[in-house]
Amino acid sequence: MGASYLAVGWNRQKKIYDGLIAGFCIGYLALFISLTLIFNEQATFETILIRSTSTLAVLLLHVILAIGPLCRLNKKFLPLLYNRRHLGVTMFSLALIHGSFSILQFHALGNTNPLVSLFSSNTNYGSLPAFPFQALGFFALIIFFLMAITSHDFWLHHLSPKVWKSLHMFVYLAYFLVVMHVMLGVIQYEKNPLFVAIIFIGAVTLVTLHLLAANKERRTDHRQFALQKEGFVSVCGVNDIEDSRAKIFCIDKERIAVYRHENKLFAIHNVCKHQGGPLGEGKILDGCITCPWHGYQYLPQNGQSPPPFTEKVSTYDVKVVDGKVWLNPNPYPEGTERPGCLV
Ligand code: HEM
Ligand code: FES
Image (cartoon, rainbow, N blue to C red; front, side, top):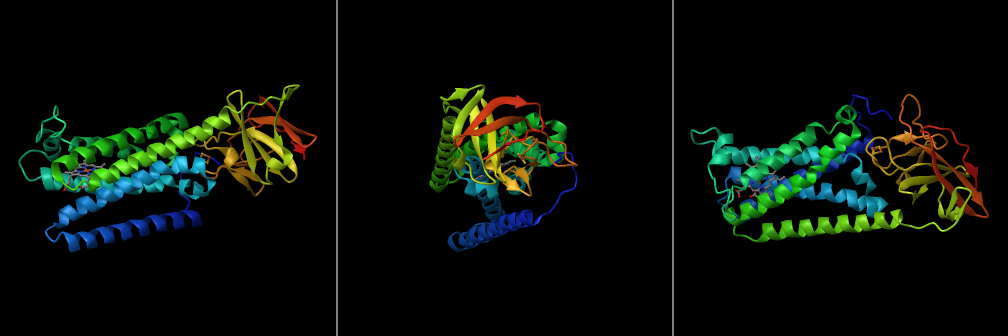
């Protein structure tokens, strides 16, 4: 699978994913607008638009941040991860509508430039209860904007996966800014504690999920392998690995995926060349190890993406003795052909 392709391919899964996102957003906005019209007759069109898009953006932001740890805890959530970027771009678009209408409503009616007014109409930067919370929303929006415009694989390829990943880690800073934006804004605008309660529950849920997922990974990474012989380490029983699936083992800080395919075992480096997805959590499709995150593929016997793609990962030796799987953690150069071993 090449990171250098330019065309956007709309496969069936992408269409279903996007259809579900659109359906959910339309349903949420319709419900929010109906309930506001029923319970708050004085609400203006602008207020309804500002509040419906902001709350939906925050809800989607929580879903986006929960997907990573949920997938680490349970593979059933993996379909959500595929095209998570579409959720991110949707969230940014909603936040942009909210931010733009807020600026129009609160900062565009005077003589001052609206963007200057955003930062100068309230200069209580030293006071927590009167803090100009809009500025925090503005900076969060800038981060979401940078993430949205670089979300395509074209940018991943040109910036390099490392820079791209580092840029996208700023989502946690943006999340913090949004939390503070809402908390400080609610103190000033809205006496209903519901907003604070929802944001608090959301933040606690996210922190808990991240801690649980980190703990699960730590247990895999710190597993001790007592039996070692001639460079090989005994990792599990043959029947512990299902057909077309893998188990991941961390030896000397390297994560290795041991796959079972057509009654043979093959071992490759666990880290996908696209965005570092866990190859051992994928499965074999059409004879290729398929990354669970976005579907990059590698041949089990040599760790190479099938032509015309050029990605390669390291391969390892594996053998079976008396029903036990033995793995040699010394990597072969990326793309090296290995025979695998019969089970
Ligand atoms: C230029 C950027 C932004 C500006 C100027 C801005 C401005 C505002 C204003 C004036 C309010 C109070 C509105 C009211 O109560 O009627 C507000 C509330 C809120 N904002 Fe923002 N905001 C920005 C960005 C964001 C972003 C990026 C998010 C989240 C993704 C966000 C989420 C919220 C939420 C959840 C509320 C509370 C619900 C509401 O009153 O709408 N805001 N914002
Ligand atoms: S395909 Fe994207 S990380 Fe593997």
